[in-house]
Length: 50
Image 1: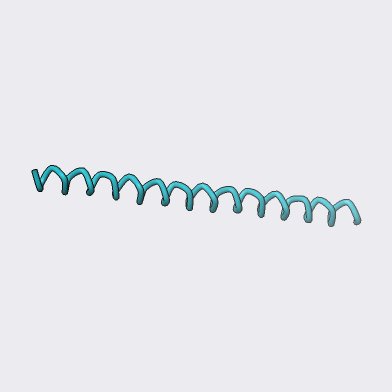
Image 2: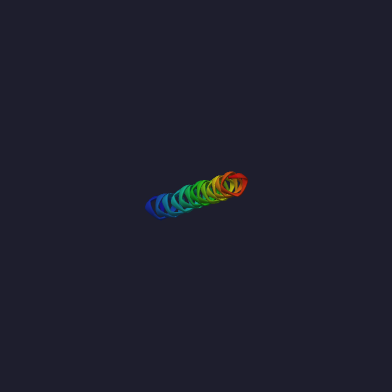
C-alpha cells in the first residue's frame, strides 16, 4: 500500500510541476510576441516619418 501511495504522489507532483512549467512557457511566449509586435510598430513608425 505504501508504494501505491508513493506512486500516486509522484504522479500528482509531476503533473503539478508540468502544469506550472506550461504556464511559465506560455507567459514567456505571449510576452515575446507582444514585444515583437511593439518593435514592429516602432519600426513602422520610424519608416513612415522618413
